[in-house]
Structures are given as C-alpha cells and as structure tokens.
Amino acid sequence: MDAAARHAGWAGSPRSRGVLAGCALALALLAPCAFAEPAVPSPMPEVDSSEQGGRFVGEIRARIGHPFAAVARALTVAREWCAFAILHPNVKGCVCESSPEGERVTLYAGPKRGAKLEDAYPIRYAFDAKAVSPRRIDIRLNAASGPLKTRDYEFAITAEPAGETTTRLVVRYAYRPSIESRLATAGYLATVGAGKHGFTVVGRDAAGRAVFVGGTRGIVERNAMRQMIAIEAYLDTQAREAAERDRARLERFHTLTERHAEQLRELERDDYLSLKTSEIARQRERQRIADGAQRG
Image (cartoon, rainbow, N blue to C red; front, side):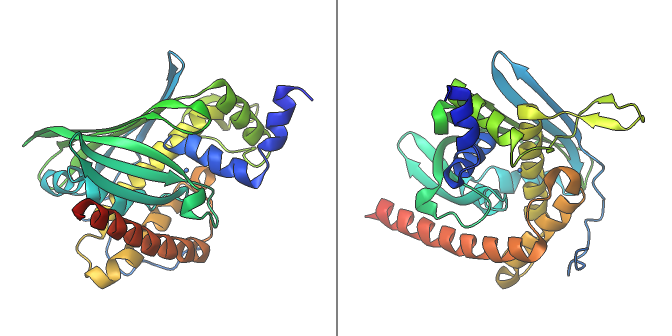
C-alpha cells in the first residue's frame, strides 16, 4: 500500500479526527435566545483566503455592534481568550500561563465529540498584546509547531473604532502544512469532510449557482469565521450574570453559527450545549491546577 493510500485510510480513524482538528484549527430550528440582539446588527463579514509561500491564510473582516473600548478590554487580556476559544467545536480546552518570556495560551485541539483533554493536541501560542493604543489594537498569537509536523501557526486580531458603538475587526488565521498533514487532509476531504467548503465564491456552475472554495482554503476560512463568531458571542453575553453567562455564551455561539449552517454546522444544539458545558468545567479545573502550580 503506498503512502497516499495509507493516509487516506488513516484519515477515517478516530485518532485521525483529533489530528485533523488540530491541523485545521490551531491551525470549524433553534429556540430563541433569552437576550437581545446587539443594538447594531453585524453585516455579513468579508472573507478571504490564500496560499502564500506554502502557508495557508484565512482572513475575516467585519463590523461588530460593540464599542471599541469593550472590544479592547476583552481581547488584550490573555486569559479572556480561553473564555471564547473554548466555544469552537474542536477546541477541547484552553489554559493561560505566565512565564519570564511572557504569557502563553495553550489550545487543546481534538475531534468534536468526546475527546479527553489528555488525548487532544496542545498547540502552545505565545501571546503578544504590545501594539495597543486608544485607536487600534493588534494582537498576535504565534505557535512554532503543531501536529503532523505542521508549523508557523498564527491567530491575529486587529480592531479599530468604527463609530461610537461599533468596531471594525479583522481576524486572521494561518498555518504551514507539512507533507504528512497534506496527505491526511486529502484523506479527510475525500471521506468525512467531503462536500465541506468555505465562503469565498470561486465560480458558478451550469445552473448559475455559486461554487465555493474547498480544500484547505475552505478549512482555514471556516476556522477563521468560527473565531470571529466566538468573539462576537463572548461580547454579546458579557453583561449577563456570571451564573448564566456560560450557557448564554454557548447558545449565542450556536445561534450565530447557524446563520452560516451550510459551512459551519457540526453539532445539533443540545449536543453542542451538553458537550461544551462539560468541557468548560474541565477547562476551569485545568486552569485552577495551572494557577496553583505557578504559585507554588
């Protein structure tokens, strides 16, 4: 059996789904919400993706209905990133730690359903929020490596005021695949990931219907969009009472995701809420242990 065939078979295995989630990530009828929509509805974001020198990049540009000061307060605190990163279906946990070199955010990537944190793949990002001013923030999270020899991971967020009550937000996600990850991704897209696509229109079919970008560009677009939605869900629910906030945040994320169901639907609402409620509890315990170790 040649290497491509072996990887195609491996892509359908349970373990492969965790690896592929890490590559893609750190590189994805509802009841009405119990809270109001933002005063300024967010228009459809602009979505771009490309391959630049062997590195895949996805970028989302949007205007969200929250004032710049509130956005800056949330995004410039490393620990707050874990509060919205966990909303992503393939993020199984997130821990923030401090060191002499600076703050680090570790994301644990795994399959959507049932992965233990110990079985997920840690991707360790250095957190940089030095470029902050009253009119602009630039946040960078960079990781040197990920699963299957992938490397050069980046989450980047830029925010600027767009009026008194709105903010212009740019979310960028990028990583450099390896030969191994390209083979695994090809197998995934030929099996469980078949038919999944991104947001960029690359043509029209014979009936005049839009044809959307697929492949790895589709993966990075979906993950960048999920990060944008996670930030928006986090901000939309900040005013809720602490005891209600987790549930409200999960419901909001799922509702916003369903606006792009063709690209982003992964779990039904009840499954998502149940899974993520347990993962948030596990994340808090993991963060408590990490904090205790640092104090000790």
